[in-house]
Image (tube, rainbow, N blue to C red; front, side, top):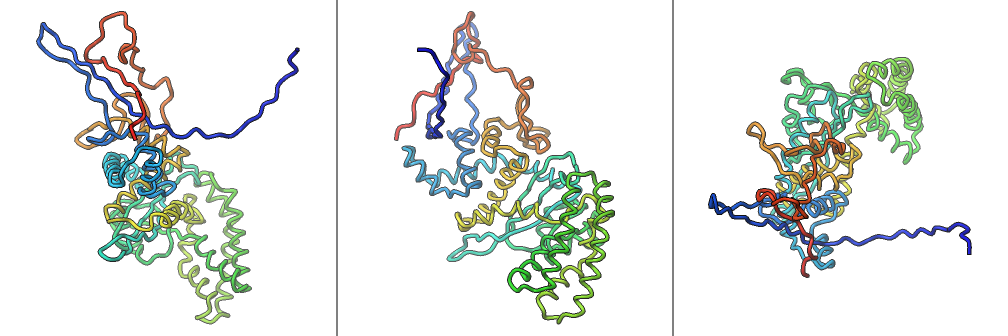
Length: 432
């Protein structure tokens, strides 16, 4: 028999998750000369007095705030796998992990506030109250400099408020004084006032929001003016695609050369057709929305940092709308704040093309350090930098050297150092 080659048949399969209990054995040593006892310190755990490992915690957090799997369903799944974990325990883990990662959330928020231009949007979230639910709000503030060639990484920060007052956005933005792209919500008027300190924010309107009303009229009522408006605005968007990723000055020059004339023609056409319509006509309302804010809609022609739309914020707010169908409501105001914190972490990881669960597990596995009196999450030695500006792991050459085999109870040519000696063993799955 001589070989004639081979055929390869592939079958897609999945290996079920495996539960293990990791035991850290810390031997004690006594010294007869100094009459002292030495033992390696206890291993770090992500949450105080908790025994859940970083990978388990990351899976629970990601399942709750990524695919939006409520805690009671996760509890049922774990019990089916032979590891019953009460819902109250899982809820306690969520609160503890929120506290542990709050310094990292704060750093992402500071990174977002440091942008030259921000996207802002909000959505409702039902909150459980006595005998009923009331309506709270979750806000997103997105920094994404990639459309105008900015070098800083993107990030999305979320915050929760009891209502939709624009004062909440004003408080969160603090000293920010750049450009904000948002819808025409009247509560944002405080942001653009000339007397705002340290200086007023410049408003940039969303063309996609304005086009949406025309599109609905064109699709549902076949309104001729609305159909023509959609076609004219689509031509502006088509030109804009070629400018994506260019430097601000290049984007501005591109727009002045190709879009400015179309925008001017659109304004004249809108004013001409508006004069023919009744004030109560739906198409008239759509035209008024544009013309009353024309300066904010045309700001993109003079500033290459401005985008045509606020789609970055709308994409960031979409997971909340999807999640509401599963978790229905937030259990309390504290739950709203926790939700905002985890969306900040998970959506920022996604924007940077990271696996959110793997990233959370890596962060939770690292002990926090205290720097200058303020808690920050960072590596106690070498390893990944967890600041928003650098979310990728370090290269292997920068990684901290692994402990020698002796540190884990392996063979040694010399006597072990009592301060380092110990071993970790994955002995068995937990008892049902």
